Image (cartoon, rainbow, N blue to C red; front, side, top):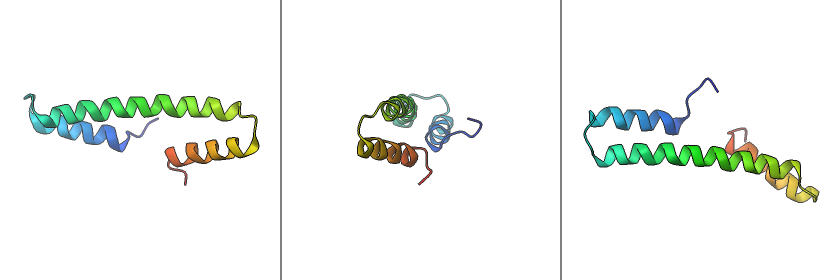
Length: 73
């Protein structure tokens, strides 16, 4: 992925604003990065689930959620 996500851009901006000081902005930047990583893990799990869905309606709902998460909807 060549383009940085909005969450990571915001985390970088928050951290730069703190000038290295321990502030709530820095804690927010850390949390944004953590949530970004967790969302990536959940998206990968969702893709695996979609590939192994037994019912067409479940696969369709899963793929729709993936498209939404990837910003394709």
